[in-house]
Amino acid sequence: MNKVNTPHLHQLNDINARSFGSAADVYDAARPSYPPEALAWAFGIKPADIVDLGAGTGILTRGLIAAGHTVTAVEPDDKMMTKLLRSTQGLAGHHIGVAEELPLPDNSVDAVAAGQSYHWFDAQTVLPEIKRILRPGGTFTPIWNVRDETVDWVKKLSQIVGASDAEVTAMHALRPGYFGPHFRDVESQLFHHEKQFNAQGLLRLVQSRSYYITASDSRKRHIEAAVDRLVSTHSDLAGRDTFAMPYVTHAFRMAK
Image (cartoon, rainbow, N blue to C red; front, side):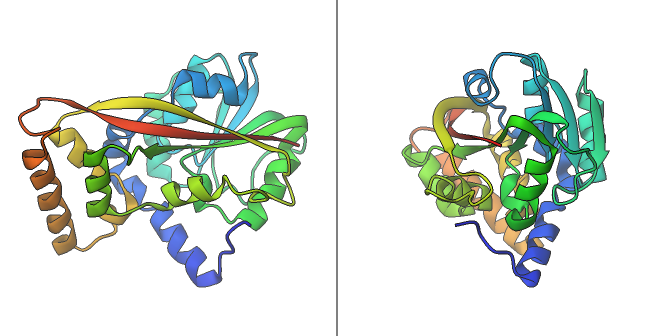
């Protein structure tokens, strides 16, 4: 089942979703890209007209453009959009706006993407909007990068920073009927990849998360100290100049 956003929870969700603009540069540098094989599976190799919802700083947008697609970005945060426009070449169009009220005509695009963003949306409102702008046979593809917690140090990092809405939603989306009744025949696939970090880069990754951005100063200091201890003491990290963060990419696709 889709989550139901009560007015209070939706307001909190909106505050958290819009918190990233203050850390747009950190977000863009620290967050992982999406593996090309995941994009090929999700969107195909034939050039397509794609809308990237909640495009953020353009991490998924740039991957789709590099794969040969025509991409229009939709993002509610003007600071994130500013970073996207500065960092992205070949963008077909862009809109400051929310996924629940898409500034696009009916039956106008081949695919809608949501990279690391669907969990911020009001599902009951956004799914009909996505169907509205999709051409017949067009696809909706939410996709998430999730830390691989089968690796011990990654599991310990998660114990410090907690699970994000993205990670929880990616798991829930695997349940039958999660995107119903608007989308029923949902396919999913997992892909493994890595991003290289040093100690400062790992801290920037943590600092790019909404739970850090919206935390009190004392809570931020506590998180930073715990991450520093992990890097300094864990056998897989201590003394290393760089190390790989393993990710599992959860990709979904569903046709109109």
